[in-house]
Image: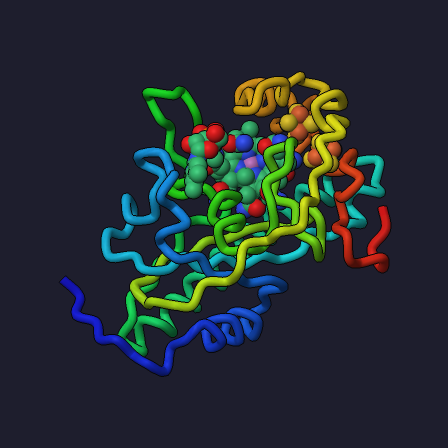
Length: 238
Ligand code: B12
Ligand code: SF4
Ligand code: SF4
């Protein structure tokens, strides 16, 4: 059992400043009451029983990848961000632990678990649900997190900690307008029901093209969204 102490120097602004220094574009904090509705097995305390706060940070995903006629640049950005954000999370948790407070990374993009009961793949906590609970944005009909700053073009990473931190307000902006464009445009018809058809998406959107290397092959549900790049920033284009 690791012994920790309640370090009063660690507050929400320290956490955000530290993650921004490490390279985060957005950072939010959720308190435990925001997970009262989480299904069994998806609660942060199912992972870290002593968890008191959930920290979510995001990096923006290069919008230029959507302007290309190939998904190779998109795949590079996806792989690099996943790797880099896992390193940022580990660095942050190390800083916290050196200050006497436990904090753990949960995996930016896995390793995922397979739930035998539902037959679905999942991270140990859902990045999108945690990000919504931390006030970073809202989950849209395409099941992706939409942020006011960067739309759905963000990559997410979640850290669980014993530190009791002030939670951010929930995002009240109704970013998704239920236009259904994402549902209609999905080439694998994976978004027809509220719980997406993971295997339909996986089989269509992930894999090699011909004899080429593994890549992401589809991101239509991201770029078709009118709020793909957010509601605030005009400087990014697609
Ligand atoms: C497994 C996975 C997939 C699977 C399944 C996706 C899915 N929708 O579940 C597949 C391979 C299909 C997939 C596809 C894609 N993915 Co993906 N994926 C993940 C991963 C690794 C885990 C997601 C997960 O745990 N799903 C399982 C849960 C959420 O789904 P579920 O079983 O249906 O859970 C239900 C209930 O349990 C409940 N629930 C669960 N937790 C909670 C908590 C609370 C409080 C409540 C109330 C309810 C609740 O709600 C769910 C719906 O009813 C995350 C990374 C991460 N760290 O989270 C990325 C992630 C979700 N993927 C992402 C992306 C971008 C994609 C793709 C666009 C791929 C691409 N081209 O890059 C597509 C988009 C498909 C789509 N429209 O969703 C991003 C999303 C970023 C964003 N802005 O939202 C993530 C967050 C990666 C990242 N680090 O940024 N992905
Ligand atoms: S990534 Fe492509 S296949 Fe998967 S849900 Fe989005 S549009 Fe459909
Ligand atoms: S395309 Fe329309 S329905 Fe889909 S997430 Fe965007 S605003 Fe919502």
